[in-house]
Image (cartoon, rainbow, N blue to C red; front, side, top):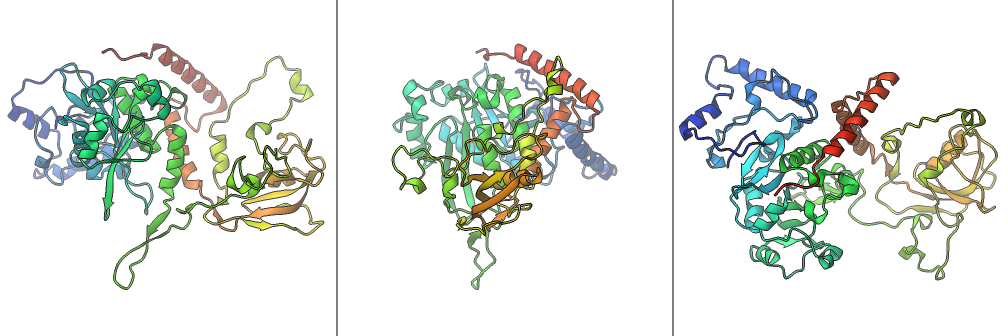
Length: 523
């Protein structure tokens, strides 16, 4: 297994093996010298400072006075088992404090590529490059699980570690017998045909594919044996795995840059599982696993049980007013029936706007600033329905007083009338709503009551099992956003003037980098 920190050079060192090994040991903190504890303390401080000051390598340049221990050893060829037990290296700048698990010391993922000399290389976090000895895809999966030391620690106590991710470039696809581009039929199907030779190789090696098959985001696994779980996820950019709608120009980056970008995303958010939307949903599940291990029974065995605060493992029906068209709950409705506001919950974020005032219309220009993370901030503290069916409250007391603090996690049918404060936008639209009332979500009803509207609910669907399910999700995305913006020079404590100046400089730099970004990788 070869290690080097220089990703831009393909030259090989001609230093004898003994000298290279000696040079590799020199940066390490000595274990037996009198100055050992002091130097180890310096290495520990560097790991902490690097995590705080340089989260994304490349966005924030490394300090000029960085200790020598931050560098990777020179290229050596020796089995992983020859490492000294207990030896610790300085963590990369974009590695979290809890990622020092020796099982995942090479990062959460690797970009597999073939260089001009025909050697297969795996680009990992922190500029680390590994030699890949695998000659076939089953051998590559086996090497990933046994030698590569890829993956990420679990995000929650009852959860499980993230599976390693391999990103295969076009040259790697050719090396392992996969097409570089899917045919039109394969693209529409989203997978390779079952009779493909690579899939047959996996079957002979007793590997399995998920029901999605071998597509842009394939998962190759073996059934769990006890607590042992073996699974590797593949990402194939040339099969449109890194769609520009979600990942921008990431699919066009060179292997080292792509590895740095995806590793940064994996450290701050989680290991990609598909599009950014899919990964966001997977992040919710990773933070709140559906099950957990129970307390030992009389025989000392543990069993799987429901994890409080999660959505559970069993699907539940939504309220009829929340059901989209075509849902099984609506099977009794006549064909081609169009539901109105009295039967369906109509909530749309774009309705939360207001027209310009007369004074605003007199101004020559209008400056609009998008409040980033506004939707995520709205999710913070929001109580949502958890495991369990919603309860129907068909008849509420007539003439119920104005609702000031509605019960969380309800859908309300009622009348919202009167005139409230319009300065913050129009939360409800009464035009076209039936006289008997329409369906509204709890946040809308609460906000309307806060603005002074007359709220008279007559029917509701209540979820007694509810909780602040999205708090951890929001906190992780918020920290990732703030860290990324800080790397771009936009700190959270800037004055409004400095903020606008920093945002202008960031936008200019982004446009410049996009114009100079390579559209295709030279072959």
